[in-house]
Image (cartoon, helix red, strand yellow):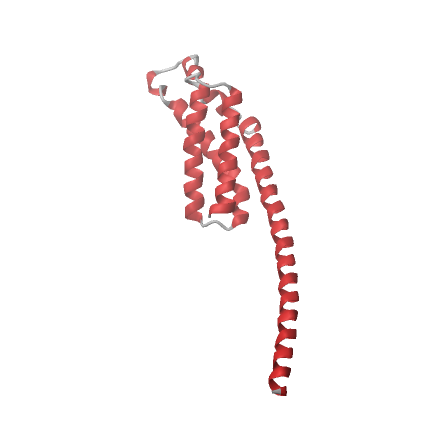
Length: 162
């Protein structure tokens, strides 16, 4: 009977030390999760900063070329240039989509999924910019709000769903 008592006591002490160790482990995991959350927030802010840089500073001549009216006003305009504004929209949208996706590389997302994300964002960005620049259906505020929502959704999907 004494043997079982000692075994039971050792087992109780082992369980207590396991309990303490598991609490420390959970505490450390919470700290790591807290740090990871700040890393994820930094990635979101970096994506927004890169959006501002690309959408306002890096467009160069594309800011004009993505507007159909700009092409119509050019000396020597020909009908063969009729859809060239779409090419400029596509180039700008692709550039924007790639640049805002750079921070996502920290999530170790597969290249295939990252390619799908870039293409999806490109199509949305191109459509929204066309609504603003050519169709004149939305203003700059709406355009930028949609782009920020795009960034937030992309970040959320990459952080929490993939």
